[in-house]
Image (cartoon, rainbow over all chains, first blue to last red; front, side):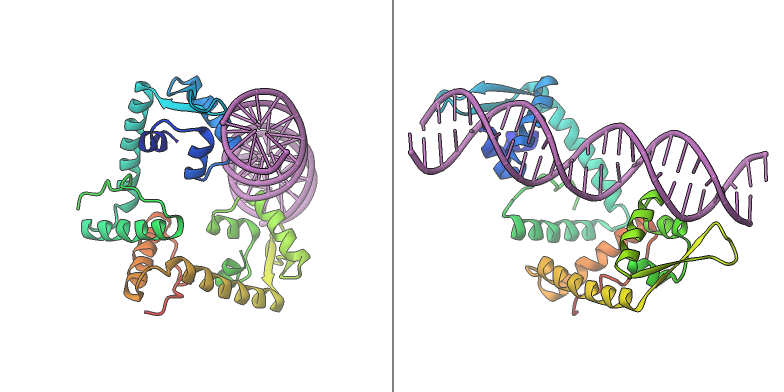
Length: 114
Length: 114
DNA sequence: CAGATATCAGGTTGACTGACATTC
DNA sequence: CGAATGTCAGTCCACCTGATATCT
């Protein structure tokens, strides 16, 4: 969710959920938790008062960076048995599958030194 | 579970769960369901009366084959965007990761025509 | 008015925990 | 006796459903 917010910018909860494949009702409790930790802020959207404009706080960005770091470590551990070119090949193929089946493009998993 | 039984032969519930990474208590309900459909039979183990020796029935084998077929279709749909040599490469790398992290070896996912 | 949004209450499910009787 | 096995009851969590009030 933090990564989505950082990527898409301030956005309504419904739209965020739609892009991430998370249900509206689940997004409520997820954002409650993130807001309780001060990682995001819910502000009323001026242009459309049905919506909340969700903003990531600086603390949220730090947390996101920390998570990216843990992700990189986890990915390194997962791909450890493969040689570097194989890791690159594997993640490339995996990204093509992801993009084909979901339309979602990301470089978030490119933590492999090629 | 059916694939594990077919691969390992008659075996206790606990041992089956251990090899498949399924908890003992969950194995009970799973086998209840399979037994209710007549796909497996629970027989008391003669050598060790704490154990149940689980056997796959002919109906269980048919079901397993049908599932293998559906698995092949699902895998084909998943790998559809990749060219045949890429599919082979991808499944090979994936199997190496699986084997490295779990020690589990299988040819069950080799449904790709290379 | 139809449709979208945020929210909440409730149900279903899979996976885990803790306990127990039986057997080795 | 300690350890393993099969079983059950209960917990926890992710996910989904249906409803409601507010707003466009």
